Image (cartoon, rainbow, N blue to C red; front, side, top):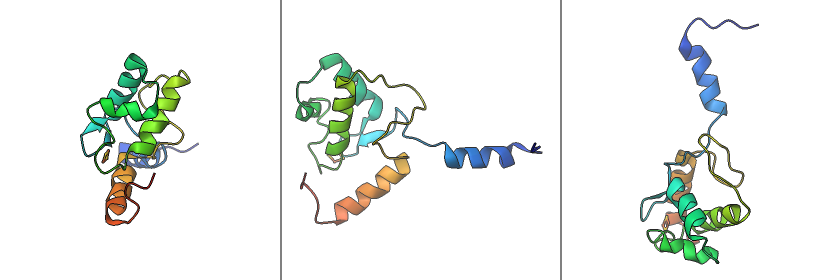
Length: 115
Ligand code: FES
């Protein structure tokens, strides 16, 4: 049994392995729309098509980076998924930092608006 003598030695490995997108993390960077707002919008408004997720603060109508995530959220809510704190959601990026860095690469690439 391991005994830890300070909180740093215990906290760091846990933080490194249990990370996930948080409800307040931004999904649409162009319009600053967080994950929580998108889930609540989909649950409340029940858009028939994923493209109608854009009616939530114009999400997805800028650079297009977040469109696959909007489609994922739409599908999850249609299937009855309920968002909870600190919950890993398959198909979403591991962390907000990973997601933001991937978007920076996307903006530099030729793949914009090719969904
Ligand atoms: S990040 Fe959503 S449209 Fe650009």
